[in-house]
Image (cartoon, rainbow, N blue to C red):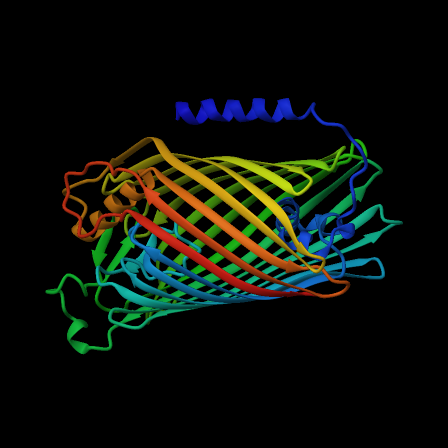
Length: 518
């Protein structure tokens, strides 16, 4: 933890030193950007993504009357992955997004559909968006998983009292279906719906909003066997189904393999915008969310279900963005995001708390633009801790990521540009520890815990290059996007346990997409 605290202090100093630099002049409005630069320029993406997370700012950082419709193919392959990852992933996505204004009301919306196929994934039947939950089913047998996910995000804002009282509503909806093709066959359905209602006050140099958050969701998991010989088979360890209820606290379960996870979420938020002069914009957003998950197995009782686990999680987050427009076509943007998650369960088998989860994350990212160039740098800190009271298993890992990149826009001809970027990211773990009980933890759980520990504590280097060809015409444009990532790990920690597989040496990722901008 000392190394994390030292770097945190360095980041605070870095922020304060930047705040007194630069020559100021009036910043250009978002609407004056060309559509292609708005959608693909890194500095614009930084502001756009902040507004997408905090929709009280859609009128400030979202370009009006600009929409995009695209399709993207992604392929990832490699064995450097956590225990419950996939050796190969193929995903096709269709997406559309845009903002418009009718009279004084701003409307923003984004819809996406993703269809993916995972090859050789094992040890957990899951939706991949609730990975810290203590309850799940799994087996050692590798499966092929197909996934379909629909997401709809929207934001509406209308100002009252001569633009002094804006009221905003943000809606997030997700629907997912996930199933495996071979025994043990998993069938996972997930749904998530969240509303955030905000009331604000606009002054000449300051705007602030207060928000209330309510959400509901569920995961429904069923596991079965098409081949009847596996329904009572405990001889072949590959096909045995396990239920995890904690951190490494797993038991065999070969009948009534189902549970429902009912999720309720409430919270509050605050949002602040400062405009001290014509050159600077400073955004500060914060949220606190309390999430309650109830894991239940269907049965024939009067209650119709058996309680397995109640999992409560407190989530606090901060989202800061400072942008400055300077003379001579120079610009600077600095973003800081932070998130603290604290989870604990109530296990109905032991009638007490058994599992605890803690994750702290912070990232700072800077972008400096000069004419056709943009340089960027980032540093991220992450600490993760998991503990199980009954088994005595515990894992604590500190991680640091540091990256640097260069972006350049090249003019091809009067009708098209090429935006190219290269980025290098280095990750390492300055402190880590794992404790696994030999007596209270079986082989299935040990395969997960040890392999995840090796993955999380390993150092790695990632090289990324991306290219966007884009037209620039009067009303409509086209773009073609290409990205290639290569990740290579360093040495692994030594273990005194024989794993069926170790995290591999590397992983590749490629993306290719086409978009129509209108």
